[in-house]
Image 1 (cartoon, rainbow, N blue to C red):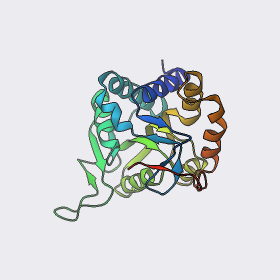
Image 2 (image 1 turned 45 degrees about the vertical axis):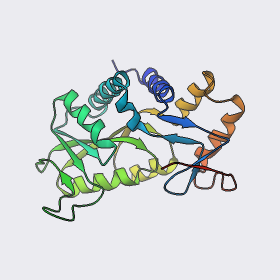
Image 3 (image 1 turned 90 degrees about the vertical axis):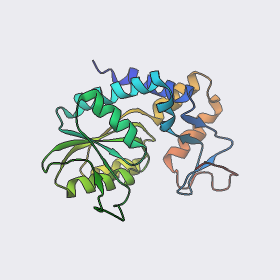
Length: 221
């Protein structure tokens, strides 16, 4: 049985414990986009923790079965979605492909790596959803190649309205194991953050592109 709320909390706990997610409201990070942020998420760290890696693999596979039913192939989004996608494909006994960020500049010029058959039903794997733009570029590539995209699953989402709008406009469903609201709730209840940081963290999620522009930052790549 897929218990959504329990899984959301457990994944949030894991991500905080192994420091895949770091919360620094008073010393924000700078994302590659230039946005300043009190949170930094690197789900690649989960790959270094076998018990966490196993839990995420199993729950992503269950989420696919619960939300999307039978599919023919699993697709990872380069680069962080590739190892997660391989693990899920192995768990489900399905073929795996991945979508490059851009086509090869040599050889076959491939944008999609692996064997595909037109009409196959595919679920896309990502590690993290922010605005969703890079994920939707991969989905566009899969659709252009003749595949039927059932939806996308990821480990974590920041829960931006912009992501919801982008996926809705692309007519693509997405589901995640955990999310920002659950993470902040868990972090506050288990002393990963102070209670007086909660309003600040919630305000960031409302207007992330404007938040903290006058704040000194700690850059992360």
